[in-house]
Length: 140
Image (cartoon, rainbow, N blue to C red; front, side, top):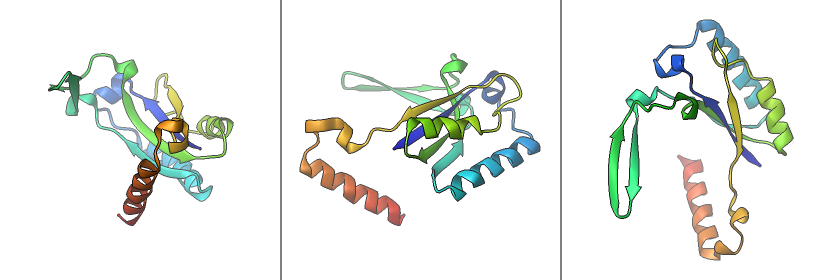
């Protein structure tokens, strides 16, 4: 089971305040534990939304909206992608995480869909396409 661990943005992260050396060191140790346990697939921090954009889809039109975006509590400051045996194991890993910001912080845990989750909508052709793409990504 794969889970995306989402670090919610704060006013400080949206203002571009960088983490302290101590927090970077603690996060480095935590990430090393994830790697050593064989569960880490990816981990990244994100620039503030002021450096981002959103593409809005309305009918056949695409509209680009530049950041910043108003609702800080709905924004993402970073993420981990982990592969574990259960939701409970994902929760346990997050409980071990250093507090991501000086003030109050929140981390959300969301399971990633697997092809079999889509049931009858997944054709053998779609499965083959997914396998080809995953193999290609593994080589990159």
